Image (tube, rainbow, N blue to C red; front, top):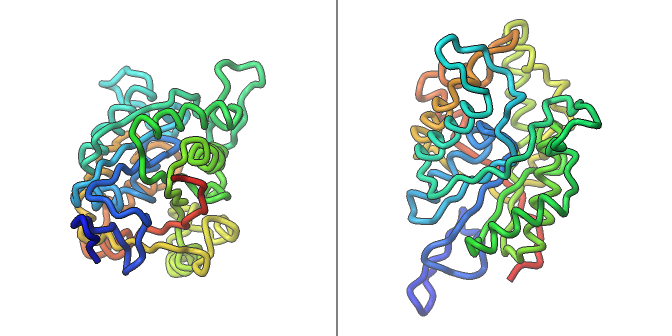
Length: 281
């Protein structure tokens, strides 16, 4: 449907993401660490950019506490390496801008000394971080903001904080559309059961870890078909070289990159969101 000014609303299976038809939207994707964008939103970002919309990636931290095997030829701190990887990933997705809020990575456990300064992102007052994100949303006149579901996906403390900060920032800035990037928990559990024979190699394939993770299928409001953009998504994943090694088991990104194209396309060709009511303009 095209309105009287010839503007076509962005839609998903007939559902408009925004009630205000507009030729070009500005869409801000808010993530906790470099590489978080690749699994949940990379296809959507690439699709929006290809359709002519302005896509902005905002990262709360540089992911300096992430797992990574040391590189003998690269002495840089992990934060610098991952920041560069994020910019390469964003370029592959067609992003117009990448911004870091500069908070400390809390780590998976969230355990850091109380006296450590600056505070890790998960312990920063929500209004303080949300105010900074809201400033960017106003500067960009953003039409859409993505955060995470209330569980923070699988429960990482920084991901839970992204949910809180994004929700408050959208309220402060009056951003019209707020989407929680998530996964279909029911589909994820089915995949985990199918992958049970591989559990010895990849401990994270244990379904018990995901019983309360992400979002049940019936609560998801948007299923975005990104199969046409999986080449960009693969390039985005490949940019995060530091996150394909390290730890005691096969890393998720490395496993995805090893998949043949048809399997990769099937596995990551849909992205899921829950639209959250806002008081935006």
